[in-house]
Each structure stands twice: as structure tokens, then as C-alpha cells.
Length: 260
Image (cartoon, rainbow, N blue to C red; front, side, top):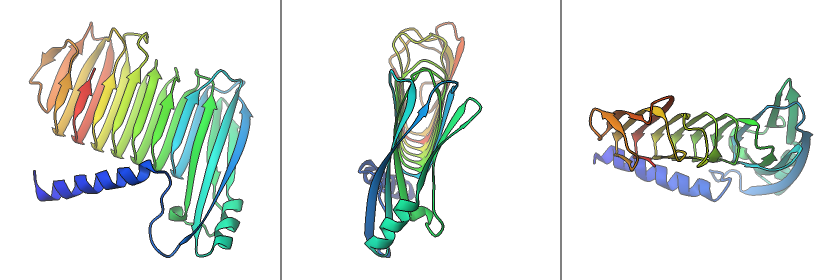
């Protein structure tokens, strides 16, 4: 393995381990920290899509038998003094804003608060049938039990979705992707998953029907599913699962792909 690639993978592993511990801040200029939590609620009636955005922080979404969207935000701020950190943290607003059939969930920063000084983790419970759009710059995205379409994008972090039944579009620049369909989901699935540095693991329903494209530039492709393959089962394959009604596209530059 080339030295440059090894160093990049090592740095990636250290960064992801750090993120797993929650919001982290770099630099010595902001030694004081203040943390507060806030809970918000919004009616789910008339809402079909959640649009969640945070710059630095994790997003955890759990499907629940509820008639409202429940949001818990953990707000962490670093500053020169604890008093300043508290002042800035108290100025962060958590907004649940409906627009048509979409409910936007985001944090609004007060003036003078830079991107690297604020971390907001969202934990959200909502009806299972809602579609999801989740965006974060640095942080993991996890969604469990949702049956609508899911779009998730992070630049640095892991994306994990379980219990899916609809189409999904998942992306991370640095991090792994784990996508698992419900065992009784429709056979014709549509999924696009892409990472630059990280592995992809996809588990389909009991019966899968799709045209498959899988590419791993530096890494391997592995599956225990019966495939009709065009090409070689190495770094890039095209194949058909079942009668090929859906579409599966999995891509990683550095990492492995597993289909099960």
C-alpha cells in the first residue's frame, strides 16, 4: 500500500474514533465548554418529509408510534471563558419550521459564533412513514425504522440506516455506510450509496430484484447473494439480482463493499 494512502487511512480511523465519542472541538483557544439540552415538538399532521440540518453534530432518527415530531437537541459551545460559552449556547435557537409538507429542523447560531465552536446533536422521534433529508458537515447520521425515502449526506461521519422499505440515497466523503432493508421490504429496491474513504455494507430484503453496479477502487467486493454477473467480481462489477426491476449503485474509492 502506498505510504500516502496509509497515512490518509490512519488519519481517517483516528477522526472517526473521535467522532464516535460525540461532539469534539479542536484547538486550545477555546478551553471552556458549556452544554445545554432543549426539547421541541411539532405536529406531524400534513407533514410528509423531515429536513434536518446541522453543521457539526450527530443526527439520530427513530421511527415511533407518535402523532408529532419530537426533537431533543444537545447544544455544546466552546469559548474563551465558561461565561462566554454559556452566553453563546443560550443564544442558539432550535427551529422546527413547517413549509408546505416539509418540516425543517435546524439550529440558528447567534452572531459571533463560528462553525468550529458549536456542535448540535439531534435525537428525533417521528412517524415511520415520513421521508427523511439529513445533512451534516461533520457527524454521524443514523435512521431506524423509517419506511419513506431517505436522503443522508455528511462530509465526515458514518451513515447507518436500518429497517428501510423505500429508495435511499446515502453519501459520506470520509466514513462507512451501513444500509439494511426490512426483510419483508418490496423486492425491487432502489439504493445509491457512495463514500470516498470507507466501506459499504448493504443488506437487502429476502427477495431482491435490481440491476447492480458496485465499484471499489482500492478494496474488495463480496456477496453471498446469487448474481448474474457481467465482468469480474473484483474492483468493479455489473450484475442482475432476481429479475432486475430495481437499481443498486454502490461506490467507494478506498474501502470494501459487502452485499448480503
